[in-house]
Structure formats: structure tokens, C-alpha cells
Amino acid sequence: MKGFVFNAPTTVVFGSGSIASISGQVSRLGCKNPLVITGPRIGSSSLLDELRRPMEESGLEFRVYDRVSPEPPAETIAEAVSVIRQGGYDLLVGFGGGSTMDFAKIASILAVHDVLIEDMAGNDRVPAKGLPTIMVPTTSGSGSEVSPVAVLSFPDQGMKRGIASRRLIPDAALVDPALTLGLPAEITANTGVDALIHGVESFLSVKANPLSENLSLMACENIARNLVRAVRSGGDLEAREGMSLGSLTAGLAFSMAGTAAVHALAYPLGGQFHVPHGAANAVMLRPLLEFNLPACRERFARLAMAFGVAIPGDLQGSSEAFIRLVIDLSEKAGVKTHLRDLGIPREALATMAEAAMEEVRLLENNPRVLTREDAERLYSEAW
Ligand SMILES: [Fe+2]
Image 1 (cartoon, rainbow, N blue to C red):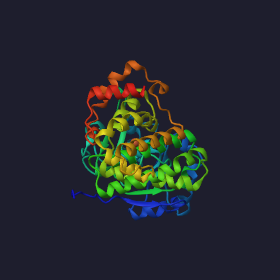
Image 2: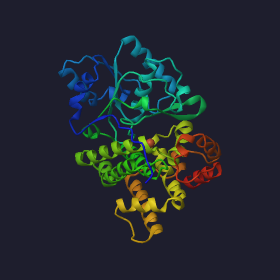
Image 3: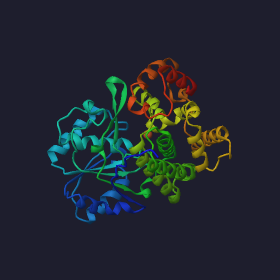
Image 4: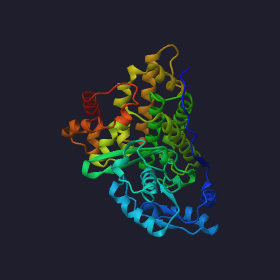
């Protein structure tokens, strides 16, 4: 058996109503003066009351910074950092989707260390831990509540880049599925398919280990069972709980095993055309699964078994059945499946392939080596 390293993750408090434990988590971390980081949509909605109420009831003083934009450009963090420094806040609560949590992670570092964001891009380049953070996801997708990764846009480079370091792992994740009940169908679909892809890519990754594999499978099972239900009836708490659990376990799995080429090829769609992360991943899913198939029939067959579509003694048939099932799921969820439907011009494919090859951090996890020519062909297939 191949040996492996398991990095114990952060504290996770999971369950509908678990938001009530927010003040307890703040004091467990020895903090008294938190700043809640969120976006303008949540900042002006009643969802914020779900967080405000338990904090006020326990007499915890806090302020709210609600200017995080979707897929946040790196330079917008500077404003939040000066608010944090001037207010002397001792903890950040990231309250929102992946973009908001990633923003809070990077702000936590910049609040106490003078370092340039671009110098941290890549693996293990964050100089030291920042302010303590608690993440409260309001979508089921990014897994950012437990992951060591933050992704930001660099508009001048037309790129999105990932920063990965154990120093970004939040100090607590408070996962309350009830917070996702009002999430619109389109966001539920895009973020849910992103979580499904985290489960699949972390399972197929060359860095997968027995623990991450089981977390990946658990993620895939929960998401497969609940994605379409959550999209079609957003108020179904059981489906939302399954999606939150799936997204969380996928986040734990890719924190160890990483994601791979679907994410690498999706990044340029976000960086150059501002396609939301989940939608960008969803559109690249089919070409990449078909590309990876010859390199990992046995692993696909294991996934087919987990999804209950395996054909005994037939690796190729099982692999194809698994791909059909995943594509069918994402189509039923209603995500877009063609680049042209996302407003990407055909002429952009070559430049996008060039940019995708920069994502070495992700491409090196892929079970099949992918060249620039492959990337361009896969974009054509997705177009
Ligand atoms: Fe993702």
C-alpha cells in the first residue's frame, strides 16, 4: 500500500441551526472583536439577521463589511484590509459563497503581514498565518470553509489565480444548511455542480489517498442524491443538508488531493470572460471526463460502483455509464454545457488554452498528461 499524509482539518460545526454557535466559536478562539465579511446582496438581506441574532443575543459586538464583489479582483481587498487595521478587529467571519470566503482568507493575511497578493500565488507561498477566521458558507459548492485555497481575479492579467497554503485553512467552519434554503435555482445548480466536480476530480487526482478517496465518494453520493432535488425545490431542507454535507466533504477531499484539469481549463473563462466559477467548471466537465477515461478506467469504474451504475466485469462500459450519469445530472440541474452559450467567442480558444497551461498547480494532479494542443481541442469540443 502507498503511504500518505493526512493533515487533520479544522473544527467543523455542521447542522441546520448550527449558526447559533457562532459566538461560542469566536470566544473559543480567544477573540472579542469580529468583523463580518460579506457581499452587498447578503449585506442588505434578511440572511444577515441569521448571523446577527445569535451574536447580539450573546452580547458580542461586531461590525459588517459588505463590499465583496463576486469573483473579487485582488486589488479590492486593500480597502477591506484598511478597515480591519483601523478598527482593530481580531477575527474575520466570512459569510457568503466561495468568493466571500476566499476574500476573507486573503484579507486575514494582509491585515497582519505586509506582503503582495501576487507573491503568494501558487503553492505554499503565504508567509505566516493571519487573523483567525470562521467561515459560514451560504452556498453548497466551493468547500472554501475548510480548504487551504483562495482564488482571486487579476483583471490586468485577465487571469484568475489560486493561492494555496495551510496558513489559509479557516480556524472554524460553521456549516448550517438552513442558510442555503433561499438560494436561487441557478446558483444552486452552478455551485452544486462545482462541488460534484470537486468530488470527482479529487477522487481521480494522482494525489488521492485512502482517506481523501472516501471523502470524495461520500461527497459524490450526497451530491448525486440531492443536487436536482435542491435545484427544483429550494426549500427542501433534507436536500439542502445533503448538498451542504456533499460540498463540505468534497472540500475536505480536495484539501488533500487537489482538483485537476477541469478547474485548470475553467480558470481562463473566469479570468477573461467573468463566467462564474461553477458555470465555467460545468461546461468543461464532459470533454475532460472523456479525455481522462483511457488513463483511469478502474477509478471511473469505482465511481460507477458508488453511483450504482457499474456493469460487472466491464470496465469500459462502467466508465461510460459513470460519465453518462454525471452529465445527465448536470443537465437535469440545468447548467450550461456549451462555451458559446456563455458568450465565449471561438477565436478566444487558443489564448484560453495558453492561459490554462499556466495552472500547473492543478494540471499536475490530472490523471492524464494534458498538452496545450489537448487544451485547445478540449475547448473546441466544449464550444
Ligand atoms: Fe471549484
